[in-house]
Length: 85
Picture 1 (tube, rainbow, N blue to C red):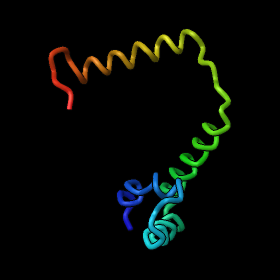
Picture 2 (cartoon, one colour):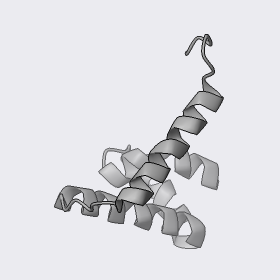
Picture 3 (cartoon, one colour):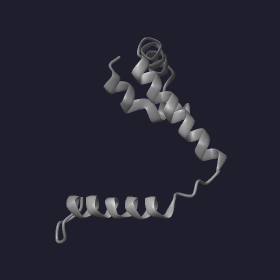
């Protein structure tokens, strides 16, 4: 299995909803691929933190800078008058 295939199926793998036959191939790939193992571990940690429900308040200046950057990127990607798919 290639890394691209693992990345396509990683949500189902992490959720435990993947077909057992595919799961075996994924696990074999993970045993030999450190970068993919890091990705899966990070996803699991993110899910664990999210489920813990402990909010983290961003500093006001950072929050404003992040909001402005997201708006800038949105406007660059979807200029006025452009239809969205």
